[in-house]
Amino acid sequence: MSYQHIILEEQEAIGIITLNRPKVLNALNNEMMQELAHAIDRIEHQSNKKVIVIKGDEKHFAVGADIRELMGRNHASNFKDNFITEHWERIAHCRIPTIAAVAGFVMGAGCELAMMCDMIIAADNARFSQPEISIGLLPGAGGTQRLPRAIGKAKAMDLCLTGRFMEVDEAEKLGLVSRVVPLINWWHETMMIAERISHMSKPVAMMVKESINRGYEQSLAEGLKSERRMFHSLFAFDDPKEGMEAFVEKRPAVFKDS
Image (tube, rainbow, N blue to C red; front, side, top):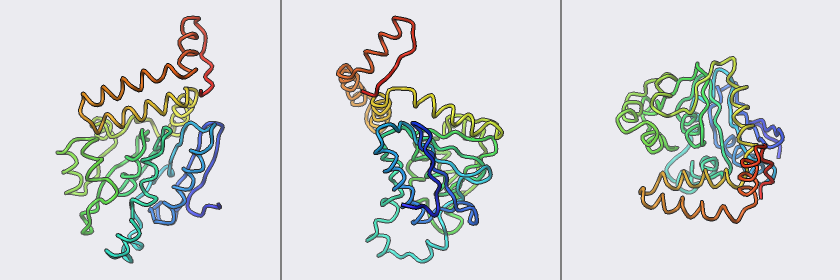
């Protein structure tokens, strides 16, 4: 498949997806999200791929959904097409670790897309907002659900009801982003993080991700039970044995993803 609205690159164990609609500041439309879902499928189904990075450019991650496309939709088409759930949520269900590398404007559906990823690495010029209310809409791709889980109910109410911008320092303080780095080092730092993850055992990284996500939506007791069962099951894999032996022998571990 040739892509019109994204750029797909593959660097060893890392898949890189660049949002590429510069004329509309990377506004997300359904065709772009179909391409994004297809690219994620392609990367995830390659046994050697361990991490996916999604990025925009240095001034815009994405400014939200394409409003001109939204204007042409109606309730019947939204329901029949399973709009947003179909394609848009694909990143949230990816089993390997995902990183959103954001810079500049991270607005509306762009912010929601970033929150679907496991980590957000933000340049120091990043600005976040959920401005849908200013055009008579509410966030429809997770803004009213993932945002309060990330930064708390009060701050989520503030952003979603006023549509204001949240500067990157506040976003880091509240836990929306994993790290903030100077724009000049932003992409290098993101790739360093992706490469570090790519050197870990793939099945173990997948289990870590699943355990955190599952526990986040359960009670503590149920989450601990789930974590314990996953920990027990790791002893059926070869990589944990290699990792422990390498630690005792004071040498780097050589994981085989098995």
